[in-house]
Amino acid sequence: MFLQIENFLTAAEVQSVAETARQAKFIDGRRSNPHNTTKDSAIGDPNDPMAQKASQIALAALQRNEEVRNFVFPQRMALPSLCRYDVGMKYGAHIDAAYLPVGTQPLRSDVSCTIFITNPSDYQGGELVAHLGSEIVRIKGKAGSAVFYPSTTVHQVVPVSSGERLVIITFIESQIPDQLQRDMLHALGEVRALEGLKMDWRNRIQLDYVIQNLHRMWSK
Image (cartoon, rainbow, N blue to C red; front, side, top):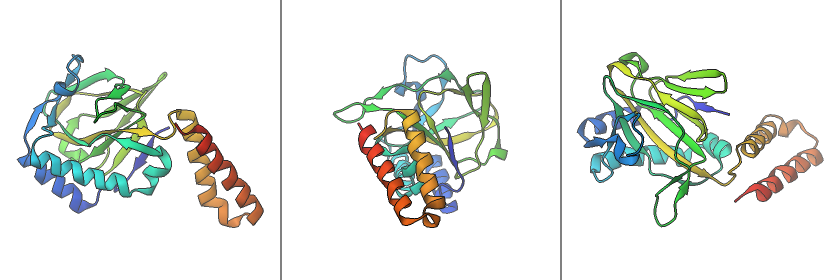
């Protein structure tokens, strides 16, 4: 299941990230995945103050968003990173690494996130393409929107043919590692949010009983 959120960042935050990116130092994107020959992008230098500022803006948005909490059930999160694709740059079909070297304990990537900074009309190509069996989903979000999807998804970024694609990416370790279990808890939460106040109170308590105890049972 995918979650797309419009206006994930405010207009002021999008502008701030875009301005910060113009001053930030970028390095070869393959630094973060040197063995993947299909990767051709630039990432913000994690030691650069401007890149760090952009990361903190995205992190604050991730931490405050209730939709994200209810969909991802976040436990740990990699520090968000600026990512820039100039003309000709791309990222071939791949699956995100299962574990990332974050702190003293590797972070398991359960859910991947892309936050779009550049207006889609300002560049050509550069779509995020997800391969779902025989189906292909193309995503080119408006500035300030975000998409969340299972890190097990085969996906790619097609070549940018004009302009510049600027995004922020991160990876999240969920309290619920199993994708189907996450989807079921999210669906039950949606029922509670939409129908809970219409229910007989005993039925509402029973629904909460199921949700909370499944959360306990499936948490790792």
